[in-house]
Image (tube, rainbow, N blue to C red; front, side, top):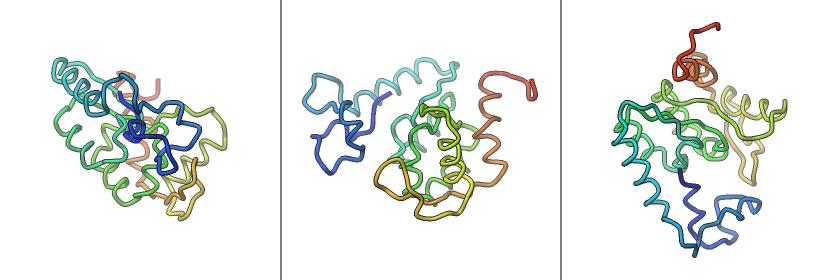
Length: 170
């Protein structure tokens, strides 16, 4: 719904996002604030409790999994995907692993990166291994989450089958 919260701060060398994403910077523009956009999301979810929503990029709250947990607890009709949030999960591997285990029925694997073996291998290494100091998509090193198989199955496949109302194996 929003973008990373740093997009509303002046572009400088302290940004969370890599320089290539500065084109999305909202600082000084006549746009709703990060908090206003999340408020719009919450009002929509409140108004449509029987509709299932999937918020991409951890609803742009991957930087604050405690708050995202509260949002998921409050809105049972909200699912999230993890696309483009490897750099947030891999920086706090224990917190991210606990979050993914707790919300394993509400999180889906997703990507908006180009489909390639390299992309899948990077996600595999982050989600499935205990590897440390993994090169990430920006300047941070990431740490593997070593998620259990039953969680991985739901993230990779099971939750999408459920949300799309597809029978397993079809």
